[in-house]
Image 1 (cartoon, rainbow, N blue to C red):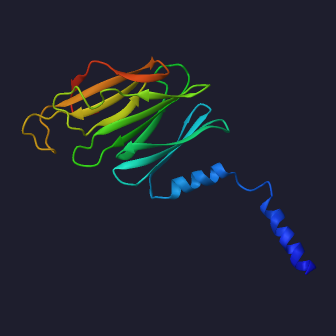
Image 2 (image 1 turned 135 degrees about the horizontal axis):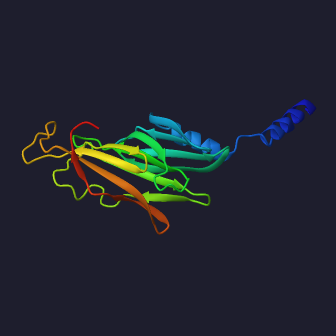
Image 3 (image 1 turned 180 degrees about the horizontal axis):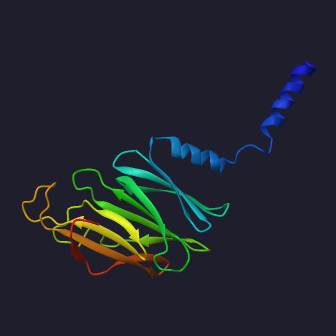
Length: 202
């Protein structure tokens, strides 16, 4: 009987040990392993580190982002993105010495419409980066975007379709659109320059 009582109290004490993993870490592992991981990368900007994970869960995917300054975890958040995540970059488009994270996605289907999701990481907060009218204002636009950062601009390139063009055979040339980052209240906005026509090569 004494042996059974001693074993019972030993088990209770083990459950109360202070070195049990924190609940937040457990929740994060469950959230990122519930479905198949489609995209995963780690990026650095000076002392900042970002880990980006996207799951393959249908037309709308779950994107998980962890941001660190040194060893300090700044944020750990999830958001939904349209289509498959195809890339991610860190930059400082407004030259304020604080990093921005840009995540690119491509929608499912024949159009393959490109989207960009962005956040700037300021000392006191994380600010969203807006992309107003992203899919509007381009005559002959039918998707197939290429997206990348070049110095202090975000670049976007896509083919132009004339009436009657097949999806795989656009005949209207290639449009290049550059965006510059500007403050907009408590957030930031990617403001487009005047678009230019160019040859098919990047």
